[in-house]
Length: 400
Image 1 (cartoon, rainbow, N blue to C red):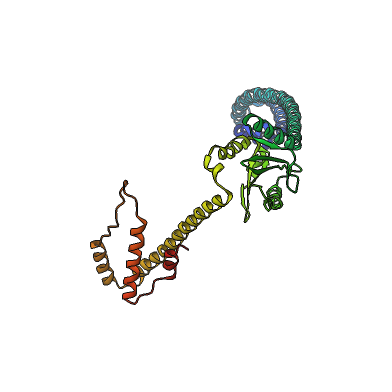
Image 2 (tube, one colour; image 1 turned 30 degrees about the vertical axis):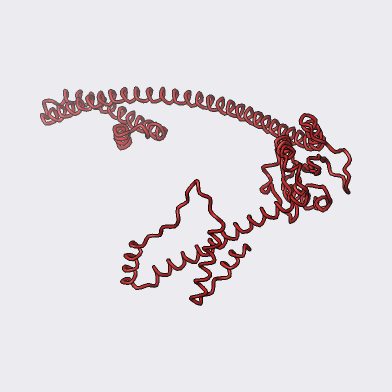
């Protein structure tokens, strides 16, 4: 009964995992248990036959041996217990047979579900591949459109740059016609600038410049070199020292410098859209009677005085900035180097001090005579005290 007991023990403790993956082993064990059961049944049949033979013999020898009768009762009782056990085993066998059938049904359902899942997986993969191909095609289409758009944009820019010189000339001629400005077709001096206009007897040059290709990396250097090349016009009579380079509008953001001060002449970088306000501003010179009445010598004198005022003002600002830096350094050194007690006393004296420079009255003109007189008093006091004024102050008094 070893196989049979082992079979029932495993059936009793079997779990779902063992049912799924160790069923073959359990099934083989059931076959062994069944064979053992059949052997036990044969033994039982044989016992029954022996019991019948014993009964016959007991009938024959009942009178002679009472002890055999008791043995026969014991055998019968044992046979009843065996029958009960057999019935129980049959019930368990039927129960396990139902369990086996249920597990078989579940296995079949699992296999069918597995096939369905595999079919769905293949369909999903097919749809995914189709979607991927659609996305790749759309990406390629967008890339092609983007490349085509960039190419068209570059071609349009090149076309605009190629037509830039003619557009600038036509624009200047139109502006001159509308505002009665003289456009000079053939200049009376050396060279051949792209466009020249005449205002108040001066020739103003407008040269059109555009990139050679769509690479704007070297365009700023090209504009700088072209500004320097205008020197050949600046040295000639009647040519205005302010000249203009006209560049396409879509290149102006690539230029960090739009004004070039090149010694005795200036170059301004503008766009075609700025031509009209620039020409109208230049034309304003004709509206001043003074400009018509002044001779070139008077103009030079006025410009010389204005230039001297400008230089003196800038020089004074430069001197003030120099002393401002020196005063700040002295204050910082005093805060850093002076002992703490002295610093406290300095702060107290500083709080008590107050400077009251002369106030300016709106209706009162600052008299140059008063300024000169005050300067002479300061100079006399410095000489009386045997003090020498700094060179910067002497230069300022001398108007340098």
